[in-house]
Length: 307
Image (cartoon, rainbow, N blue to C red; front, side, top):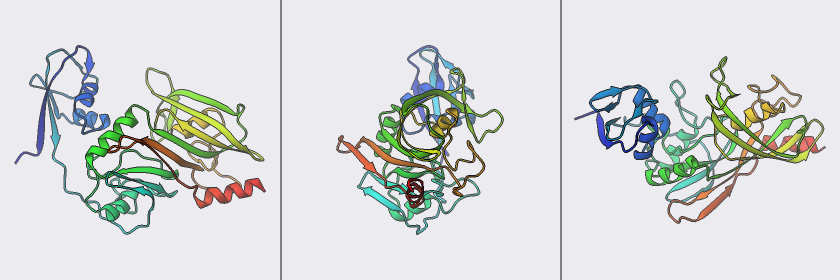
């Protein structure tokens, strides 16, 4: 029995990158995963292995895509309480608590949201993103709380992932920033890439090397030394809001990575909450929208600031 499933395609255009071509014709995997397959030598063009995502195809090139068979699920279900805002046969919306990691990683295989949803959903989770990320169509940072979509089947996963790719999903966050923003409303329109000095961080860069990141913001309330801000994402890049606020010199309160090392409230981790998420339902094809209540730490902090 083969350890791979092979798919064959014919290129229909000149000078198209192979990773772009594959992401358009093979919808069961993300572009990042396809780039990983390319790097590992699982892509063959006209009988020769291609190992660079930037490889340019020519019209009528024959491409073989070898996708490894999924390994047996090794992530254990855990009876961890989760705040479910909505659930049906296609997905559930979870209000992720601050401090919880979304999915397992090598050396960190328990206590995550995935462990919790495996317990809740059993075998009813999409498998597109591999054994470590069943059901996970998008992520939020460990210390960011709020609404997260968990997909129960591959069809729903693909449908919602396409909306994420097209930036058509409504994503509204609330956060508390240090200092006062110069403009009460505005847009941070930049390009982001991994920081050259610290690969765990993102930084603003030039158009040639980065990914476009657009963040709309609006001040909802001002306090002594802080602003409560609403953020609406037009794109969904890693650490997008956190970097945008650092770029404006008003980092999120508690964000040790992009802001001050401590604060007078003793808050650890950015005060940021994914409040609203909206998208076209994969089955009904109607727009649906969900709101996640603010976590207790956020509410208590607002009460302190208002006093």
